[in-house]
Image 1 (cartoon, rainbow, N blue to C red):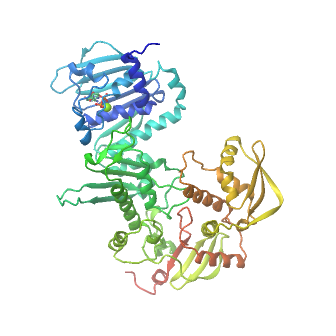
Image 2 (image 1 turned 45 degrees about the vertical axis):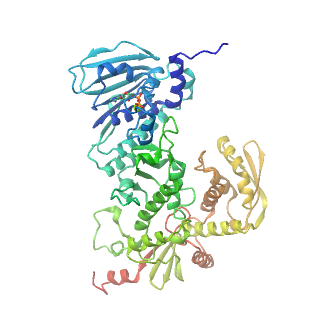
Image 3 (image 1 turned 180 degrees about the vertical axis):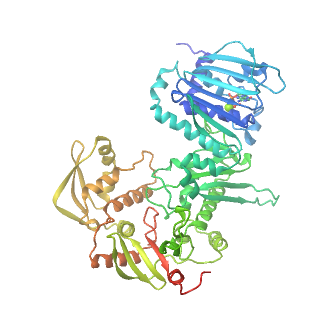
Length: 592
Ligand code: ADP
Ligand code: MG
């Protein structure tokens, strides 16, 4: 075939592939256009998870009738004139590609009116072929209607996931934009029902509640940090605001790590790891925080033009941004991460707390388990922030020597320390102990293992078996002897001595549960996470009676841990009732 120029329809269909991957990407482009147009109200209607209809209506400044056909052409934008402008972009769009792309793969109608016009105008585009601009009555603003997305690209249609998944992607996108733009009112309608609505009153926590539920929203910790530029011009060069979850609130994957830069939702591996580092050892294994963080920085410091959907960016000073994010998140976290001690109310029937959530947990900072040494990036600055946040420079990290009193409810150990009573969750404590021992043995490349008297054969569902097969090398490095024994069947011949008596099938199942396909490529992190899962499965359970010998050795082992106060998943292993609290409760000392 001779070389020839592609027709503009074919060219935009190819380009469309980059920007418009699924219904949610259409919603993203249209919402971003509305935000760029200064909209205060954005209303989104969806039918069939966006397959048959996506309509985005806004009250922004509109498009003049004589520019309407241009708006829908490729490389037509009002947001950029010369290439220099690329380096200080203030708008979400600038490529002039979205409308043309969407128009080339759908039945597309755009209706718009600017404030100075008496009437609006409408243009239809079908599969990239534009009709004539017509005058119509319309309110000021723009309505874009996208019907039968991908009707002319059957291959794309085949790649769409289930309606539930596509619908969820749209919801998750809109809620995130609602969070980023709390002063804009958002509404999503599906058929006749309103599925999301925000007030546009600037209250981010209310939007968090719509996203995660009231309970979670209430627990989220606020982040507010700025960094002044060295020039001393008085204007903050970097600012980070938003919310992060406390260590007790986690997810099994990193999908709830939301990050915006200058109002744009990005998926930046580097920023995600800055956040994870801030949580390091507090959540560790297999658990991830929820975040909704908003970074503002000078536009010329960040290149947003590296990816068609602009989900990735490049920083001019990546290290500076990374450490600013890491420090700010860590500071917020440290300010709120205590070991819970029990407040007197829990122990008395005198006062019935009105708020059930607040029952008994007095988040005092006494003996907080946060250990700054455990953060890989430890600077003097970090230390400063500790003392400024809490007004006290040092924390004890371990636990004092404890005297075992006994076990209650076959679930908790009771112990006495120099400063009061300790209730220890035997399962969480054992998880921590197993985890630290296993990781230490692994470090020394010496994980003693023990042959099972009779090898155990375990059968898995096909999908899990596939995952497990990929994880087998991990197991074998960690002192298990496991091999494939037939279709979806495995044989366990040996286990680490550490887990002796544990159920081998449980260990195998732990490897496949919660498994994420996009698990981090960082081998060490994955290993620690998987190790944590195995330890969780094989740790003694709540409800298991322990002999006093077992109780004592668990307590001793816990005392020897580096981070005895949390399990590898970040839950507390113990609750501390101070002598002071006891004395006040018994009326030996007046309430403060
Ligand atoms: P970009 O946003 O990159 O400029 P688009 O194809 O998304 O490219 O939009 C093309 C142009 O159409 C925009 O530059 C803008 O001038 C206009 N436009 C699109 N949507 C709207 C809207 N909702 N309100 C006002 N103008 C819009
Ligand atoms: Mg755009």
